[in-house]
Length: 338
Image 1 (cartoon, rainbow, N blue to C red):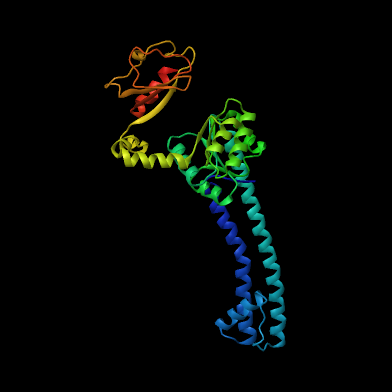
Image 2: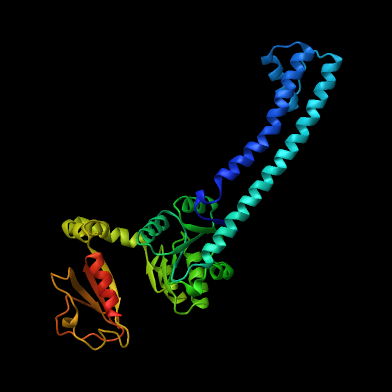
């Protein structure tokens, strides 16, 4: 299993010093050989350097006529070169293994400290965008992907990431799925998303699971497997394109990235039993032009949605308020509604 974190977090200065120390014996042999052949054979420095290199690398030299002492010296250089090459190769392998173990220790420690986090499975184009948004919102998460190169990309972006198979229950357990806020399945394989969803739902019956689906048939199966919400990038993209053609100005206004740039944020506030809004009318909500907040809609427990609810509409446990406003006001509203 390959684990990754910040690329710059594993003592690069120490690694550089070790590499330099490994290069010193080879430089010493090169200098010794150059000086020796220059003195023994009377060659110029350039020729001595060239001969030392081909001797050190044992590539052969049929065009050189050495004296007896020169041949003996060349034999010593060959033995030294082979021994030093073996030593350097062994040390490099050891460095790679130690480097990997360092990554694993660092990441295990970071994962052990996670709670109320998201598990993002799949760091493709969609996964990278999701992780960037989570990072911008300071929401903790860990990335799981089978492909090492994608995990390294996530690591370079500063994310906690592991290269492993999320269909394995042990991997989900290691990522503290029982303490997670949610799991996001974004692999390009619907079959894998179904298995991961089923595994996560079995391990944690109350987990919020959001899954990607490429087809309507697989979307239905993902819901049966336990996905809380299924999103089809193809369908969502097609709807967005169609809406852009039909209602371009409305789409521009509702674009989340544009709204965020203007300081507007959407949020969903659940009405739980005994909370402030349970049994109260919408008019009780502290929203006004001065509060920089507005209630956009109410989602009922039965799945229906009421747009622009009237002030006398009574809220009950299981409902949810969709609000929009300044990020600071949204956070305060969510805290008051608890």
